[in-house]
Image (cartoon, rainbow, N blue to C red):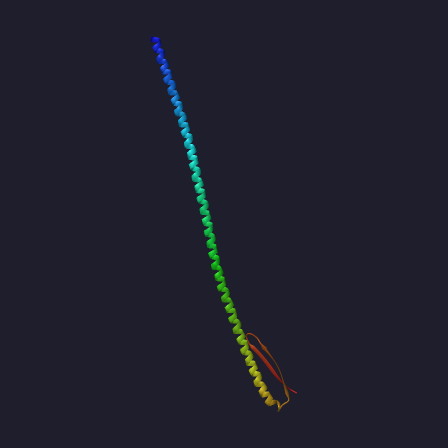
Length: 154
């Protein structure tokens, strides 16, 4: 009986040891699976975060491009408006200068006509007394008037 009891203790001890070893293997396997699951979860969360950040960056880029385009359109409208105002002023100034030049030339022309009428009137009164001819020419420029008359006695 003593040997049997000893063998039974050994068998119990071996069985206990095997059970403990199985438990350790199961715990080790469980830890390995948990670690693998944690790594997969971390990878997936990282992927989701990176995807979210990428979407946010793309949206921010789209908003920034839209805003830059809007600013460029506003700037272009301002430039066009300034150009139109400048062109209108230039046209007005050019028109005014043209009218002033036209008025000055017309005024000089009227002076020449008046002078010619005066000379003709005096000449008609005078032509009966002398036999002379009038020869003349007139040059009207934007800045001055040149008038030259010669009386030629025949």
